[in-house]
Length: 511
Image (cartoon, rainbow, N blue to C red; front, top):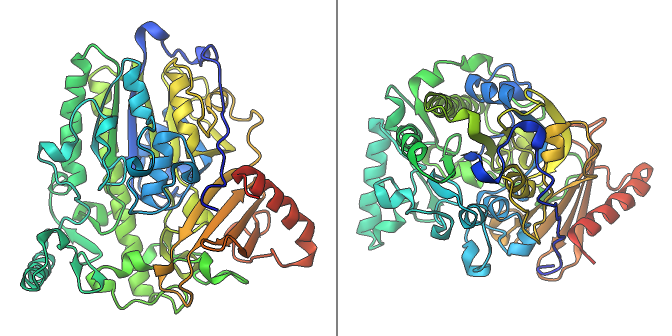
């Protein structure tokens, strides 16, 4: 299974430019502001959620196009981001998990910013673009921000006395046990980072996302003066755990009125490897005794606290995006800057009795994608066509007036930017490696492949060592948009199961 996927070259002639959008030609290529948001699911005003406070991302949506059905290639950070940044699927890169560094398995791969640099762009970044422990220095024209004084891995920044005291206690224990300081986030067998939430009255730049936006606003002034078009990547950490955000963003929501998940239960007929074990949230000190999804549900109080923290973190990040958009406008750069915003995957907030990502369900694989192009004729439109994150690389190449490199797995979405109803892909493909350490009743490692059409989601799980098919899932979105009932074994859907199996195996080049 590890070598069965063969990438398909999706070549688009360089002459097929978005000429109707007003994008400059080769003599004056557009700048690109590339905004990544960690763990952001499509729970925003522009995606139809009237409860979440996201005025700035919604403002961006009004100036661009919302891709309502955009899918990541793997619902966990490292493989999702590596796939997006290279335009290759995880099986081609051999990056399936959080511990594999992309260059260790694909040393000569040409990333999106590398290709842009090769064609005259100045590429720079702040924040989390790749997995934060693998920043990939080859992708940038200047050193990564952690070499300029920014924290290397600033997920867990705390200010409350309680959290700071807990961290200091943990540090002393780790050092007393003779462990290196780099293991500061580990204590015994538990991966802990103090509490999963923090609500404290501090300015936006007390946390890393606000501080890096301060930097980004100043950086735009510098980039404006440059002689090259720029690719500026700004990666936000929130709403990734811990849900630490300034108090004013918590105050936007009434916890008692926050709508909870519609389906806080396991899907009917679900194979056990299909679900995650809540390990990410259970890694925090105050959540370590919470149940796995297979063993039980979180209490309503806990669910409300976590969902409140997630929403506060979304609104905090939204405010930083607003500052970026304001700075771009103030510097007079909006007329020649493509803006793209994406979340690296979805995130469960109690759906399927689960929290975090790491499954092949719709709630994990579907993520936000918004593209704004100066002068675009489809401004403010929404497309419901199926797109994939591997499509971003060729899309930005075409928008920049550059030939699309050979061998990319995706397809430029420029035709959709011109006409959101144009005929498009039959399916979007994702996969997830369920490692043996997932702490379920089964220690076998499985690879799950999934194909999503407009109406159905189909999944096949393979034993990673024997390559044998272990389980199937099929969900009918016409009657079951939350994927609550697996109908792969229903005789009434036998033909559809076979049809979807054929589509999946053709898409992944599985035997």
